[in-house]
Length: 224
Image (tube, one colour):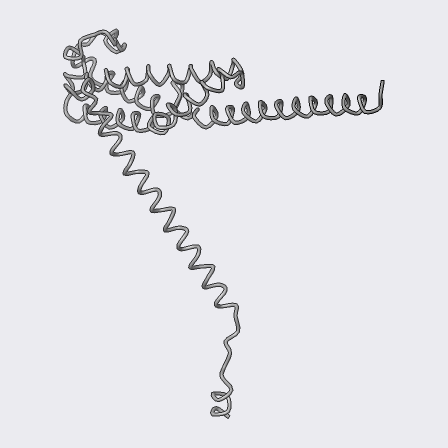
């Protein structure tokens, strides 16, 4: 085999190895990015957080009123196909209904970071999956998260409608939660900016105090 052909063959093989390594690294980076994304969105889950807080408050209110209202125990179970106008929530005193409304609002607000981030990320992950750059297990995790959020939204909407007519089915609770969420985000940003300003001022004061004060020569001579 001529030497020039051998050199060309070696260069070609080297190029293939280089491309394979580069593609493998890109796939690994995409998978790592996807894992980080899924971990960052794992805060609101059915097994914990604001949903559990609401469920606990819901059971507390039901148990406190069951004997007095003569409710059957099975009325506690959520029936998403039931008529909200006949729900036990409508028979509550104002104080109990207010407590449930507050807990349900916290549950709704807790989902807003996920509501804001999931749709664009879902589109991005769908493109990666179609190009073969996302593992099957990761894609299933993204879809499971989407399905959970849809189910959570249906439950919140129904529970809100049980508490107050038109609060759930017309989406009013989500509009109110969006306003609260924006207000909280604005307050957190203002607090972070104020803390940064205070730290900068403290650092500047420390530097200023560490620099010796220079007395003009004329002042020293006058003092003498």
